[in-house]
Image 1: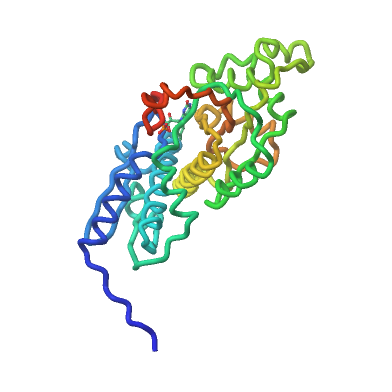
Image 2: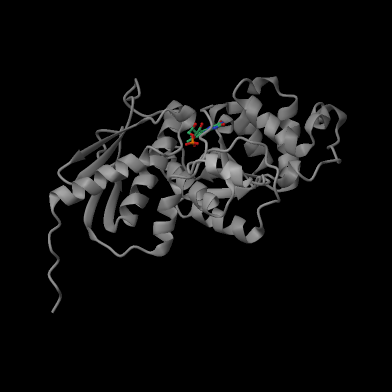
Length: 312
Ligand SMILES: Cc1cc2nc3c(=O)[nH]c(=O)nc-3n(C[C@H](O)[C@H](O)[C@H](O)COP(=O)(O)O)c2cc1C
């Protein structure tokens, strides 16, 4: 005979949902705008895009905000799983209300795997790291694990080959149309390709050869998928969270770049360089940073939480 499932008290489930909302505040979002609104009602957690788009319907200009909401959604889902709850997630639950992005319902208790508990602890520690990548390249085994984490959320991660990064660096080097948001992307690619040597490379019709090993320690990748609608952007955000947390757990830093999805020209450049690309959602830089030796004195003044660099 099956053991009857005991109904879970509303107070207990609401408390878990509130904890998920608190954890979701740590999610990455463009300009740190945190463009979401949560609502807890009768044991159900609803996620809304906030502020509401002026046209009522999320358009391409709401892509970045929806990606941020997706990251917050994944943070909330992971937190509830780590608290021992089985949750049903319905994305875009109300066709008549397109800014209502997701609904989470607690179905009942569930066992917690050590992997889930460990990843949820990383939520506190993950942060966007804009420092130059100075450490050794991410080993292939770690890169496969990070890629699998990104791709567990219905999107693909295209890791760029060196020739593709050079192609992008050359294509963006002489392009004045990428200012100002594209400048960060351009300079990251140029740093990888060998700094100033890339400037004017297209006119000289040759790629720079010399490089410093440190510059090339960074891995560049593009998060992409088959569609360009709210649901796809939500999945992209969930992937950003899953992949960034997995990377942080393996000691790798993440830096998302939105320029390639904000500008038509940048999207075209990406598509030309990567013919198999679907719709690009975000470009990612992954890397390791050479660790600085911590003297015993420094240890006492170092706080447990990593510094959170300012928004864009
Ligand atoms: C959709 C999206 C686009 C972003 N684009 C950029 C970017 O182009 N450049 C950048 O430095 N950071 C970018 N970020 C990172 C945010 O600035 C960062 O998440 C935010 O400042 C909060 O900091 P945290 O990630 O350390 O919590 C982006 C984040 C998201 C979710």
